[in-house]
Length: 191
Image (cartoon, rainbow, N blue to C red):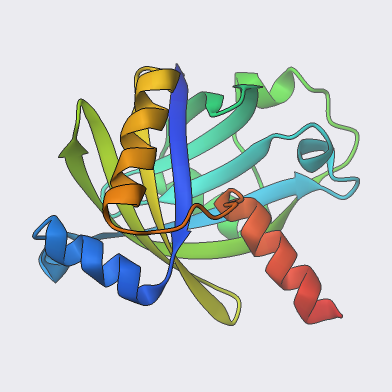
């Protein structure tokens, strides 16, 4: 199991702003990698109620189960385990999970269910001592565009990120995490 602190800043973009960044950072279509995230929670929303997110991320060469929990603003603790293709398939088709220490600590009373799936086409670019991600996400019947910056320092990262947005005349937009956007959109569809 891998545990790390993730310091991130994110902002939703319009399609035009996203294309502006693609041009500015000289990114080609071939630079993007596709990933599919399956998000899980209990019937009584244990993870949501505790401001955590639990997902299976499927990439072309690996599968990751990740639990994210907030430490402070812009800082998340991320616990990740890599799983086999067989374990991935059991999760997707039967919601059957392997033994995972960070899940077992919760003694969940309710079974895990898949609350949604989101596909992201992502490119990462080294930027100002951190990593910049440009994401085009597709879920339910919608899509969105996002820029995310990961840094090793909150104050430095925030300054770099805000300067980047300002230098491209991009307004700061309240940006929920992908799982929250997916859930909000699905709830809107339900009426």
